[in-house]
Image (cartoon, rainbow, N blue to C red):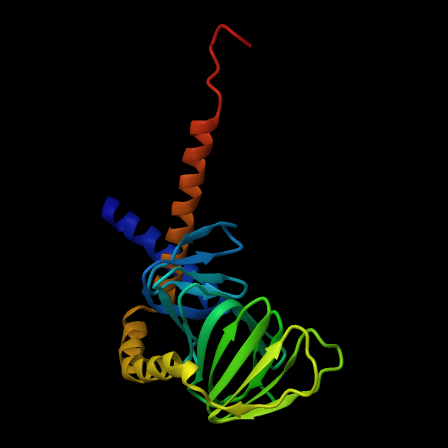
Amino acid sequence: MKKLFVGLVVSLLVAGLSAQTNESEVATLVELTGTVSIWSAESGQWEKAEEGMSLLAGDKVKTGANSSAIIMTPEETNFSLEENSEFVVGEKKSAVETWYLNLGKLLVKVQKKLSAGSKLEIKTPTAVCAVRGTEFALESSAEDTSLAVLDGEVFTASRVEPEAREIVVVVNQEIVIPRKVAGILRPVPLGVRWAWAHRRRAYIVNRLVHWREFLKRLPPEKRILLRRQAIRRVQRQIQRIERRTQPIRHPHYR
């Protein structure tokens, strides 16, 4: 009887998580290496990331030195975050889905062309890049944004200059958009500095089938459960620290 009761409670918990996941899950962290952290609005803290965790709109993903993370959406758009980078999970408003690369390197592969009228945007501190179906790499710092197009085309513009014109960058071209734009910006042929993006591109192609199978074995309710467990671990750690730092009150003194 006790086992039956416990099983019922677990089933209800999973069902509730499943309903919540279907409404809010944006993507899944399908692979990581090294030190990868997640910041969620629920905990308000950085927590250790785990493969298979659900990602919600507004979550931040941060990689340390010699670290990386692969994020995949239900539409199989892949975001490959390289070392020492910070990325904000996107939110879809109307037909536009916007993600943010705050710092570092990112390779984006839109596996399935977006429907007519839909658009994927990646914003950095200095630029915005918009696509429907393509493959491109970004390097972002406080001073500038570098864009390289490996397939298709990307529409990009400065986020700092109020009257900046939109620039079309096509396959095998790159462009640098500085914080302070002086003169007309033009794409140039792709340089050797993007060798890391070509290597990462080949890796994603080889691993895509594995990630598909991984997600089949790990349904949404289990992915959101991994997320909740990570958040609870952080909350318990904070509570333990708070208890240790509280002054000890002697019963004879007030």
